[in-house]
Length: 189
Image 1 (tube, rainbow, N blue to C red):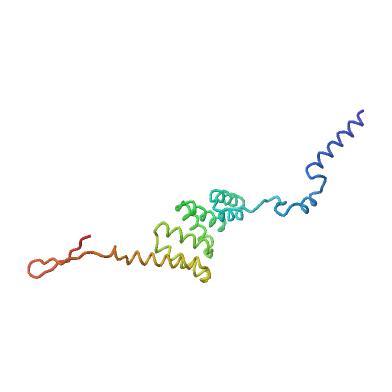
Image 2 (cartoon, helix red, strand yellow):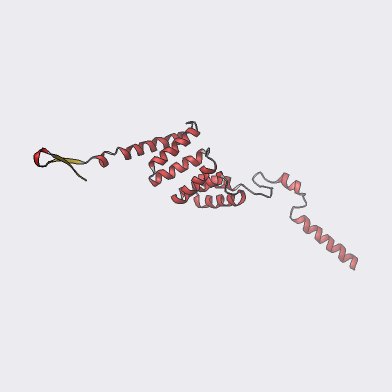
């Protein structure tokens, strides 16, 4: 009876081991897996998932994916730029600016980080600095991106309008005569 019990236990153990893969070896499982299944231990890249979620307008989920990427990869310039961009989309301008400045400091040649930092600065009303950042992004991109060109054009127009705004610069001046032929220029602000 003990011999039969040992054979029975060994048979059940073999069946249980075969159950998870259907009797296939790990190489067979990887070869026969559907294309969307990641058979590696790592999983899908959090940055890639975050980028796709950003395109779909799912900013909260994109933030989670980018944070997962930060945990896996560390705070690389790409992760910093992605986190800054999603915070910009979520309206968190202060956080976005801090993260994008760190991304630009870590990789000064990153065109997306430069451009997105310029957008944050425009939103915050820092027109002069935004213009300089857009000029840097435009130069790094060699002027090939229409969106960066448009952002630079808009920054130049807004910063020029802020300096030469007719309403802000128009004052009603009046000359008032003082005694003995002296005139004083008065302004009504």
